[in-house]
Amino acid sequence: MFDHCLYFNTTALARLVDKEWTQAFKPFGVTPSQGFMLRLVLKQPGMPQHEIADELTISRPTATRLLDGLQALGLVERRSLESDGRHWAVFPTAEAEAMHAGINKASGDVTRRIQQQIGKENFDETVARVRSVSSALK
Image (cartoon, rainbow, N blue to C red; front, top):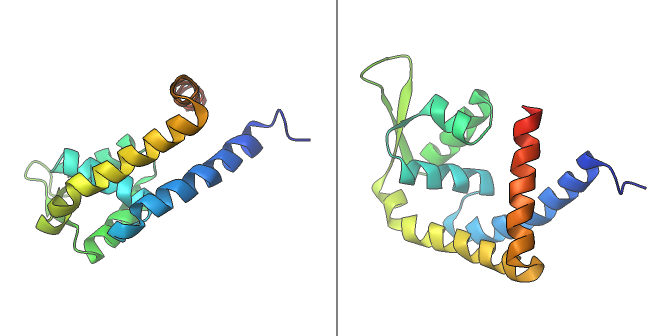
């Protein structure tokens, strides 16, 4: 019935993939959304909060809620930008730095496991096509 429905099929895929990432990030006490945000902050410390939202293609209020959660867990801190006091730069804490290698490894493990299940070429093509469709719909 829904063989040609983009919404149904991408949502079904998202639920399956979300289960994998939930398990991967569970040992770190973060959700998949928080985990990806934390990985970005660890990779680019001091990134302005609005740029984090743009990079993750989420709304600014959603980014604020995710950052609030990471801050409550003691994994990030916000500092006023010197160039513009209305915006915040986000930095990982020492606790987040300590889990950097582990969270990256967990992410890599999930990616490799899915690649093994569906084939690396299929994985790469699917990611590229989904990104292309997302870009076209923006």
